[in-house]
Image 1 (cartoon, rainbow, N blue to C red):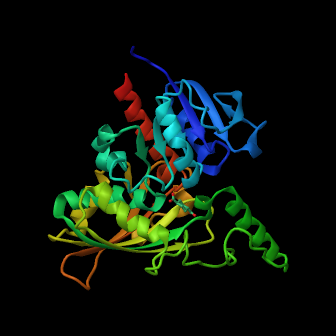
Image 2: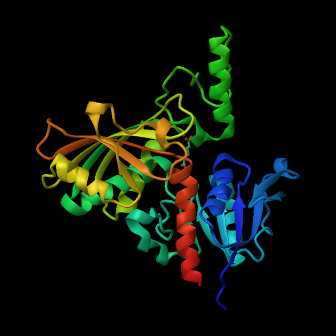
Image 3: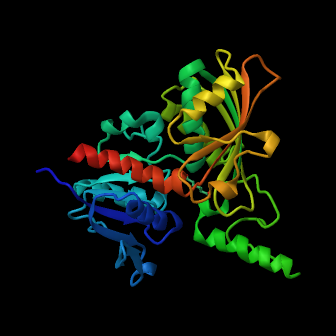
Length: 338
Ligand code: L14
């Protein structure tokens, strides 16, 4: 039977990414027949709006997926591990935004602009990469195709929205408290995030890297399909609400001029080059917030090595870094189902 419309479940519908998934589905005109909004017990009774209608939120259980064609998960790795298999058993294709399955060799890890075709190897689950990885590989891909990427050194400046709604509130409350000569209360992060930078995202591993850093290092190789690319990362939380910024140093196998690099990136899907330093033109978190594209600028030659470039990459972590990328994958899955 060919279907023109799909029953879509959003798992973690009340979260920052879940909310955005609903609005991206609506905004892009995804062919939704019915939308099923799922979340934890605490959210039962809430209603969220989709195409101008109020839709109730139901409790996520193993029985939530009867009749669902596509399930978008963004409720954390534990929920994905527990419930994604049930969704697959019920016949749904899962697009999972958590870290649960990303490095599973059976599960494709996809950024459509980079490795769209990996989607078609799925066995029910497709993983959505980490937000910081997504925006970086969208820019690395055209460079890799042209001259081969040998090594990447990245430092991130990540917004609090990646952690979720409680972290957004924490930055706002701490900022207000401090400006009113009151004490900042820390619940979400181990230290004050207002007027501060924390070199700590996700938990620490024995290697000294954080899990967020390890994700960037491993996921980049998998998405680019090249385990030989060397990557080292330092991931830092900064007091910004939306959009991650990244300083990215790229060493290439063959020489790539700054001019040619700009051309390649300007022609890359989903990328906007903003690189007019004389006019103070460079990518900004404040401009990228709410946008779909990945912004890149400050493109310059790394004078410390033979073949190296430095650049500054910014994108909305909740959109391209999460909800939009997941819906783009769902669009390709839906086309395949027709
Ligand atoms: O998707 O910003 O693996 O705290 C987990 C940590 C997303 C960002 C993931 C954060 C990340 C999140």
